[in-house]
Length: 249
Image 1 (cartoon, rainbow, N blue to C red):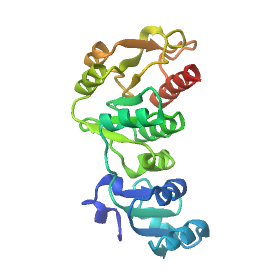
Image 2 (tube, rainbow, N blue to C red):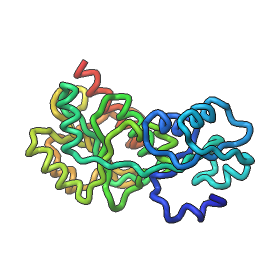
Image 3 (cartoon, rainbow, N blue to C red):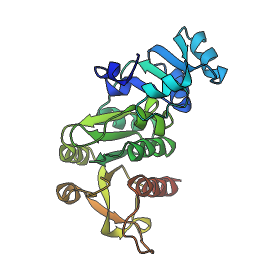
Image 4 (tube, rainbow, N blue to C red):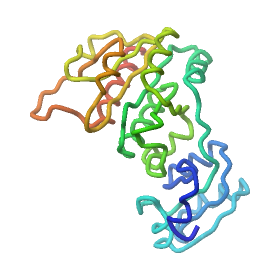
């Protein structure tokens, strides 16, 4: 792994960067091929990796950062097995196993790795049972997404779907209500969200696509009191997710 180009043939989810993301990777049980770490890095990660018989290579920090996707690897990069993607049925089964109503987050055309990473992190903290991302016209599980999620991708069921509308229709057939956020919807705090729920988060530029909006059972609005007419996608998602948490108690 001499430079970024040497990783072109790797699955993007098999490169993990950042202290917390790598630490959660070590906790997750995924197979780790090798750990690259800056020579002045905190020894906790090194000791944990070696205790798990992971090969560790200590290199100059500037060289390590040059190898990272965004130049902000925080002194550590891991090469590991790709993420094992799940299905929506896996998410519903997890909800049943926990004795909870399904709560699934669906991303409709997100292109910012920072937004997707933040949404996955919030979904894990909010107890969601999974996150669905499109195969096409969307960011995947890149090293930046994993780092921004603080390693939550290692603890969250993630599904890659070819057709988001079909996913929504399938969930409706399984008794799960579908909702999306848009400005012309009903106030989100006045809507019963203590139900089996799939929450759709729109892309940064275009928001929810018209077909997806039409497919959803409910359209929910977050009040806007300032001059701007929209929230950041990950912020809007967090607001909605924690309203679900509040209502479920």
